[in-house]
Every structure is written in C-alpha cells, then in structure tokens.
Length: 387
Image 1 (cartoon, one colour):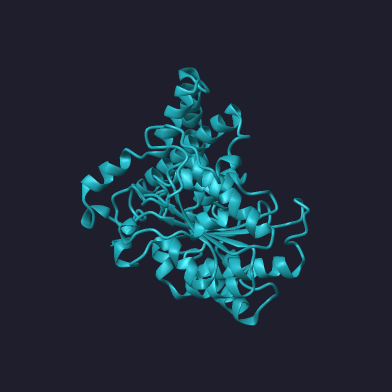
Image 2: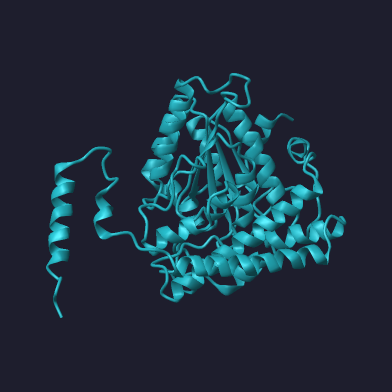
C-alpha cells in the first residue's frame, strides 16, 4: 500500500463520533497505554529518532503544558486579558512542530503556543500579546512563525497565498533540502465551517500550493460539537477539493510527527496541498471567556484523560528503559523554574506608549493614522495637571 493509498481511504460515518477511537483509518504509532504500534507507511519517519530525541519530545510536552497552565492562572489573576488554552493538544503541536524545517513557514491560529515554543520563540511572546503590551508579540520572520490570527480561518488564505508565492519563486521540487519549502497552516474543527477555509482549499488545489493544512479537531468549536459541523470525517473533505487527507491520533506524538513529516515532504516535492486532521480533544475551555461545563458532560472529559499525550509517552519511555524517575523529576523541576520565570516576566513587562499603536498599520505614513494619533495625544494631554 502506498502513502497516497493510506491518505485517500474512506472511513465509516461512525468515525465522526466523539468516542475517542478516531475510527479504523486513524494513524497511530503509540497507544494510550504507551505501547508502540507498527505502521508500514509511517514507521520510516520515526526509526531514526534516538532516546535523546524522545526525551526531548517529553520535555517539550511538559514545559508547554506548564506554559499553558501559567497562562490560564495569570489571566484568572488579572494579569492577562484572555488566554486560549491548548490543554490536551500538546502532542499535536509538538509532533507537527518538530517535523518542520527551519525555512518552512507557519501560519497559526491563536492557541499554537506549543508550535511557537518548539520553533524557538521566546515563551513570553504570547503572554505579551494577551497582556496587551505589544503589537503582536514577535517578528514573524525571526522564526518563520506568523502572528496569531484571531479571525477564525483567515490564516488559511494567508498561508495559501504565501505557499503560492513559494512555488512561483521556484522553491518547490528542486531536490535541494535547503531550498524546497513547505507551508503549514493550523486551524480548528470549527474553522472548517468558515468560507475562508474552503476558499483556501480551492486556491491551494488549483495552484498546487505547497501547503499542509493542519486541522486540530479537538471535538468542540466553542459550544458546538464536531458532529454538528460535518457528516463525514473532516479529513475526507480534502477529497472533494482534489487533494489527499489523513487522520492521525493527535494525542500520539510519534504518529503526529511521522504523518506531518510525510505531508511536508510531499508539499516540498511539489505534491501539495494536503490536509491533516489531528484527532484530539480540548480538555479545558475554548478560552478563559468560555465555560465548557455549560455544553459538555464531565464523563466525556474523563474518558479523554485516559488518552493523555504526556502520560502515554512517559509510559513508553519508562517501559523501554529510555528514561527513569531521575529524568522525569528533573523535567518537573525545570518546569517549576520555567513557570517562575514566566510569571516574573509577565508581571514585569513594560507597557508600550499608547501612541505606538499606529506605528505598523501601514508600511508608510498615512494621513488618517497620523490624524488619529494626534487626536489620541491631544486627549491624553487633556489630563495633564488634573487632580
């Protein structure tokens, strides 16, 4: 069976249910119990991973979960305006992020804190954004990681356009690994109901854009279950647009890494676009402005706890003798120090002067922006000397 055969196969309608198994077509290399599974098409992408690599994966997962926990706590304590949690989706983000090459380009939504972390971004960056002390939080060109996109699904069009440019520049299918470039675009299951996403699929297919669409199907689009958004598994939608789709266990870091590696290679070789549906679960709220207890039952959450991505990798490492309790304890201690640095950095962030909010709206000076800036400065000056 070829890779293309794997991604084109059809799953039964029951695969869209929220029972957590993902259906028979879901690619899985590490079971929830931490047992290694073999796959004829995807094993080749993980055989070269060393014990050190896998311990690094575990460290990434733990630190990212701690980053998420601190972001949530800081918002509840009034230090952040909002926080979108990634709890439960760590393996989908680390696995796919580690599969990227440095010159690949990432277009995130607003909760890809884990992808940014493994791309080498300062973990304070996302805190700056949600604390409201910067105009985005980072330079997109520094780590080839675009700014967060709050408008649901809009980044799929940005990614497609960028990927079309990559192809027009001749940076696809050359055989030079330092030149051939892929684009990856993240979005959730809810975004698949947006027109922007479907338009991006049309353009990507029409122009053979080297883009990998990475859908984190966490089962809930705020308060709507995925079963109300689609009658077929999300990965099968790709077939209607004329390109391959594959469903992977999003809580399995090995499978996510392997499938993303394959799809990125295909895109770089000129065989894009492709769609990955990472079948996972949002353990927390959609954002800190949401209360998931209003629309889902606790039994469902408890069921998914048994598929925890960190626990399954920890079990695998321990069982295979690749890590011991001393290692796990050291990672926990590092996470504690990491959390303290995050908190201190967040609380001590300097606030940008208010007039700087107009600095990067346009590439050149704009009369409307300058008029608004002048009005703001005049308003601010009106308070000088007031009691």
